[in-house]
Amino acid sequence: MSVFALCFQFIETMTSSLQQIMASTGNGLDYDKEQELKTFDDTKAGVKGLVDSGIQSVPKFFVASSEETCNEKSDLRHTHFNVPIIDLRDIDKDGARCEIVKEIGIASSTWGFFQVVNHDIPQDITDEVIESIRRFNEQPNHVKEKFYSRDKMKKVRFNSNFDLYKARFANWRDTLSCLMAPNPPPPEEYPEACREILLKFSKYVTKLGQDLFKLLSEALGLNSNHLTNMGCADGHVFYCHYYPACPERNLTLGHTKHRDPDFLTILLQNQIGGLQVLHDNHWVNIPPVEGALVVNVGELLQVISNDKFKAAEHRVLANCAGPRLSVACFFTTHFEPSEKLFSPIEELLSDDSPPLYRGTTVKGYIDFFASAGLPAYSSLTRLRL
Ligand code: OGA
Ligand code: NI
Image: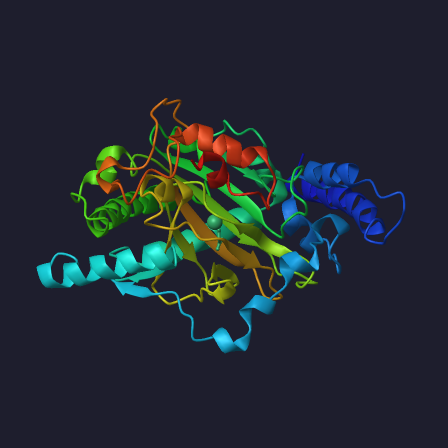
């Protein structure tokens, strides 16, 4: 079949699926959410498919409670809150390193979030990563849909809302996830639109991750190799998000509030904005800063640091501008079938600081996280002693 015929067929299918989805945006009594979700999922075109078909309102299954979307807690009196921005330029100079370690320690224990600048990943690389994710999402659907899957074992997969059938409401977002290490798939399995640049970016992120785990170890008062020796930097997965512009942005979210179920996340975002962290009971914007990467503590690091570092709740607002693009690099090894248990680090324990968590395997932890839809109770609570 020619590309034109395929496109035509796709538009026809989308139009009829959309008519069904739009018909259900009213509050008809015969609303069948499960069926709506399936119709949407079967298009394999994600939220971008809805937007491309000219949808002017948000289908009902995306609509969140006002409690979930409310912005009350980000009132103007708290605009003085700012996520720390840490300059890594002089990490190899003794005096400066000491200062950086201190700043990272404070940011990780109070915010659970910080941004880094002068991190040694060239701007042309990060720009190209963002462009490649745009390219992947904006190519014809017949190319993209080959990657569409809900199989958790797939090392490369594309879908809209990993928790579509479990979440209380769907998010205005599509995601391509790629396992990069360890045991990556053969390179041909990554989408051509972003293959080369993701492999390059992965090398840079590995190095930055190792540097950050050293600084975090030192901030905990441990030998600088402690966290890497435990295996925190052994693996990473890219979650490449595409948040289309949203016609009714106050009704839904780009990403429901959550904590990341990994050791550490390094996040690259484009210039649209919308990411927020819950700090001191207030939603605080994490604005895009030219050349910066966002870093946040994951729940597994909170467990092994015995609450010295905090995994903070964060979310992404839906936006009238778009698309917002981001690549979240999760340091995790959940694709590995390891039985290794992660529990609070011995050196951090004392009579005054007894262990707060039971040990967990990385895979067990993420499986529990994925078994519920967002917003979920923190999986941390389950491990709490
Ligand atoms: C995530 C996440 C935020 C973003 O992938 O866990 O929080 O800005 N992403 O896309
Ligand atoms: Ni997150």
